Image (cartoon, rainbow, N blue to C red):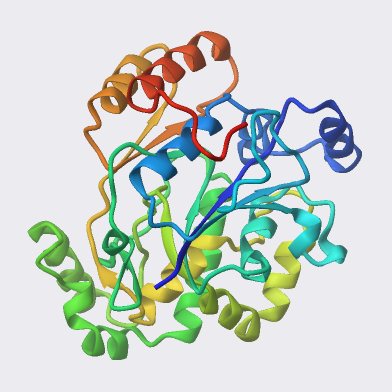
Length: 333
């Protein structure tokens, strides 16, 4: 089975890109579209080193940018496919500054394998992983237990995305039918017993609709055909999403594709060993220890907000990654 990786990246420090973004940016953008969502911490070489060292079985890496090419990147690497937005996103949606548009057209990338793993640029592998960690019996591995969606505090765009995604899922899938058909996937020995109890309780108390699935903020395994199906089933909704230059409350995102696979039973149960932590003065040493100690399969180094010393914190993270990934990869010059 061929398995590809797809990773998105933007050089938020590029002045030409900043000027283009400013042409379209409105005055009222919430945290989902704030400047720190686009800034680069200088860690991408380690992302590629980790892929080469820990997942040498990957067929191809599709590196998606608006056209940026890092000065350290080796474009002649046989496993690298550098993809510009204009290479695969329909022209009517460009330019875009919305991850949702970039994600929901991902199936259009030329030569993308049917089986692929999607990464944001803050998600890093930290120890060896096998193909079967991502796909088994031709299906994506993921956590399929039901987790109710809840909101606390002032909701942002990502909470609206969850509501929009769930509406589509419950429009197309009849929970009682799916729960009966895929019982051994929604309730599995690989989940914690508390997870299984919760799923059973939700089936009894709220039998008609799925109330939510876990958002792991981790690399996600997908079938390309899932995105193709979504465009067939919900063309107007996806067109509306992709027509927004920036993320919007009316959008859906790639969680919809992940949850479509779960609701449709097109997955294999798995626990994902991934840790998410904000890069702050208080957290950075803990994150660095996790990386150096290779304590988890994957780590997400989340950019928290404005007001942090990027240079100091990124230097600490680079030192931690350098400890486990000291040599250049073939993806680098």
